[in-house]
Length: 272
Image 1 (cartoon, helix red, strand yellow):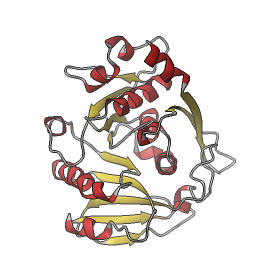
Image 2: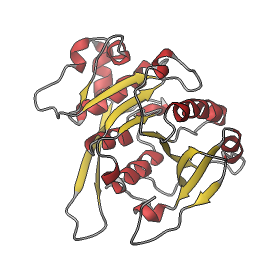
Image 3: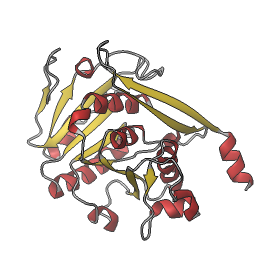
């Protein structure tokens, strides 16, 4: 009980409100994300997550009725946004980090999304009691699955995933030691789902780090999307102070021949 009370007292809630720059548009979406004031990386909303969520908001017409998997979801801002925009969402994080899986479920509950608790559910094990994943009054009808997936491992859980239309990852290329492990998982998903795309945001932390060679080795093509295409070329997005002055790249990765391209920026056509 004492541990639970200590965790509750260290929670901070951030609200992100997505809307168009067009003054004639009345559409908007508000998402509340609970952060745990703890040194683990997955406990916070990072700059890349807000940029990716903005990209999803900009492409919201494409997300309806799609099956979306978020890798390394942590506090799950992009995945929660995708669910609220009409996608069937699976949130995943390391099977070895139950606190990260708990974060995924907590973000869903905060936004009145139901979290599935099926047989051998990792989220049940992470939360420690089934009551925490039971629907509450006032919940939305959307259902989100939380699963433990470790990058680079072709696990039974990975093998049992349903058909996926879209894979998301914000700042999953954080540690160069993990880059290839991430691509092993993405490559498997591409083989199982040849038409899927991997939408990911990457924070440039060192000029010595490069994904280009790895993507070529794994025969993946990458399209860099200018932030201005989806109204993300500003230091403050969705009513927050993120992404700040960090250098963020938006990438659309697909099965291919290792080619890199830059999407042309148009003000009247943001289609891919």
